[in-house]
Image (cartoon, rainbow, N blue to C red; front, side, top):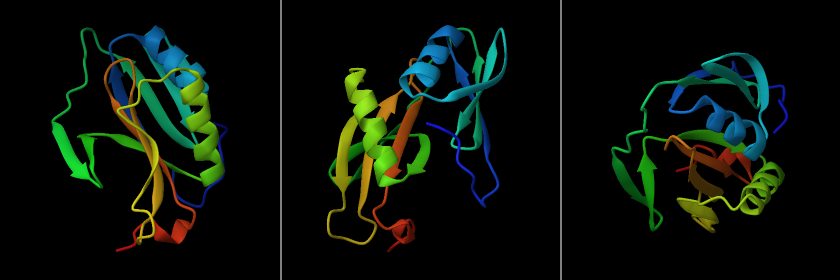
Length: 145
């Protein structure tokens, strides 16, 4: 996913991983994120202009506190992700499907015909960190009620 200019300030998220090599493969090759600065035990990733940093922490496995039922699916909590355009979402969903990703919740349309209608998918990185990618045909629906 190439970086895109935004008028929003970029966020920074530091994420623990148990294996920096597995993180390099997942975030760099599977997700297609550009690598920024890196060292032996950490890597900066360009997540559409936001700074995602993976830090190796020995023996780490992400805790899933639980799930929350949303539109008939058990959504893992905690999770983080990104809102994409519909075209970006489709491209990423195809890339992940081609990579034989084991989705927690496969790509699908959530809330069809309702306010906040969105495409969404959930997956885990190799350390068990939950990620969600979503897209709105109408970005103004991001906070629709």
